[in-house]
Amino acid sequence: MNIAAPTLEIAVLVLGVLVLLFEMFAEQIDKRTFAYTAIIGLGAVLIGSFFLVPPPAEVAASGFWSFYTADPLAIFFKRFALVTTICVLVMMIDYAPIVRESIHGTTHQSGLGEFFALPIFTCAGLMWMASAIDFVMIFVSLELVTISFYVLVSFTRRNPATLEAGVKYLILSALATGFLVYGITWIFGVTGETNLSRVSAALASPAVESGPALFGMLMVLVALGFKIAAVPFQIWVPDVYQGAPTPVTAYLSVGSKAAGFVVLLRVLEPFFILPQIERLLVLMALLTLLYGNLAALPQTNLKRLLAYSSIAHAGYLLIGVVCLAGEAIAYYLVAYLLMTLLSFAVLVIVAKQTGDNLEDFNGLASRSPFLAFAMLIAMASLAGVPFTAGFLGKFYIFNAAIAHEQTTLIVVGVITVACGFYYYFKVVRAMYWEAPTGSAAVPLSGLSRATMVAMIGGIIFLGVYPEPVLQALR
Image 1 (tube, one colour):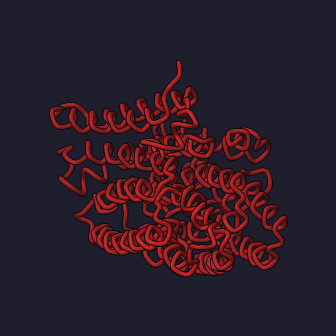
Image 2 (cartoon, rainbow, N blue to C red):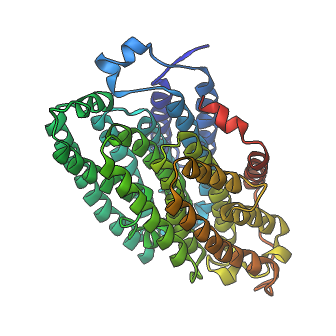
């Protein structure tokens, strides 16, 4: 069976619409059923992606499909978006009691259906972004993702911190969108094109002025810098990550960041003929590495610590962007998916019983050895301990930097990795060395346990044998 290229996105959109429609008329059933349905549906789409057939080259290059590509990079990140969304939906099932309590009290289920449906639409937007090779399509898919996140971030709206996070994200994201549209307008005004390949051809012409094109690209970089949480566009990250529902924070940290880097790779390629772009990206990478790692050092709230960690990892990924190392970035993002979602999955379970501060993890090893071990693996991989996927991810990024003779980035990168060991292992110390704050065992569902086991296995397996990820891009 062969599947045409855009069918996957259409299937995800149809799934989201069906979940919303059935949710409207299903008053009596447990609304978590829709989360299970979404997981099964997205799993079927994921399996279908292995039968994907891209449109013929002559069709994709012109006409209606000129905005869309199904190259190996696009297919890889479609699967990335699907896996991320499935894992986030598993977290949302565990988080459902908090949503129900926050919105309508403990006896009603209103709102849960929408809470499970919105990630499906977000996933469709992420998949479109992976295939978008036209500025107009990039803008449309980006807005589909962003509008879904507007609602998700502020979903538990009775919580003042959540409401504040939603307002901050809405205002700053709208501002970033304005920069994106303004930048696209300048690029179109200079080149007369919105298709990335035709923009590249136009920029190669000596008749095109590089100054206005560079200004337009700077505006686009502001918008994408917001999406990937790069300095100096990271100001929203700590408050939004802390205030948003924890599964949404995980989705923002992994899904939104990955899509932003895919778009960044595609958009930057035509503009790398301008030397100013590389120098600007080097500066952004240096500032992002330093700010993210140094700001994470004093944090005592785990969600804020992971927020600053997300900024730091954006810095490592920017090193790969400077070197245009697509394989290194893809592998790093897969490693980041596994270790970040694993840490948030544990956080959802523990925070539901105690809280999300570091002291709430004191003695977790005695209360729940499995959760403590899962968090240990996640923190070790985030820090870059050998034989984990996080270590190989950093290795590939630094190897690309060495090949491109980016000495400053390598030196700063290695120093900031050392900083990471300190703040990640504060969590490990709390779990294994501090006295427990309570004696109650932490309950864990079978689905959550299975998902965590799969992520632990993925971190260790890819830390030893990275070929499955690298082969997927070839």
